[in-house]
Each structure stands twice: as C-alpha cells, then as structure tokens.
Length: 127
Image 1 (cartoon, one colour):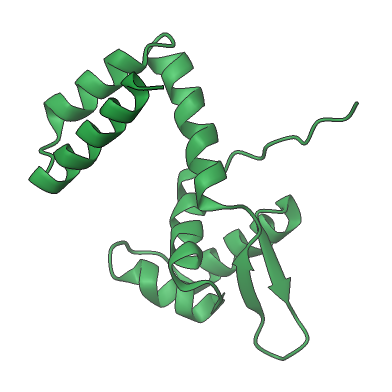
Image 2 (tube, one colour):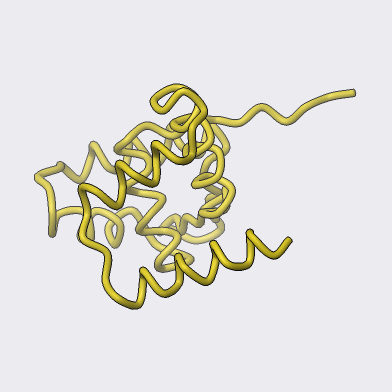
C-alpha cells in the first residue's frame, strides 16, 4: 500500500500559497505585487520560489501562453490540518488543550469567533 508523501511548504512558500488560495489563479507578477505589500522581496526571488514549488508539486503551472499562470496544487484545508497536527504533536506534546489555551490566552478573539468556538465545543460534547 503506497502513501502520499506530504510536502511541507517553507514559510515563504506558504505566503505564496496564501496569495494563490485567495486568488485561485495568478501570474508571478501578480503574486509578487501582493507579497510586496507586506515584505521586501525581489521579483526574481518570487519567480524562483514559484518554479521550485512547481517542481515540488505545491503549485500547478499553465504554460500554454507566454505569461505562466499558477494555481495551488494543495488545498488550504489539507495544509492547515497537516501543519496544525504536526505543531500540536511537536510543540504542545499532543495536547490540543495546551494549544487552545495558548492561542486564546495570547490572541484576542472577537465575540463572533468565541461564539463559533462555543458552538464547536457544544457539538463536540453532543457527539
């Protein structure tokens, strides 16, 4: 039985994936312009990273036209699940309680977010 190996994106690759998850499709220039709003990165650096991500299988590339168009090859939800699971196991000793205490203790949640968390907790209790 074969298992699909998960490719862990680097922090820079996650930033690029976030742009692609938000947009769906984007050229290197569009991704670079979005990233430039929050960090100082050269166009060629963004291009090289996206080429590497294509080789790794993190993004798909349509090169049927002159300007290559990229899209995510991995889902945001699957990536979040994998990275969160790894973080819970390595950083919090497998304790989701410690993760939640740390997250809610250090980050102010809005009333809507707290309501959503409460609904989730209620659903989990009733299962």
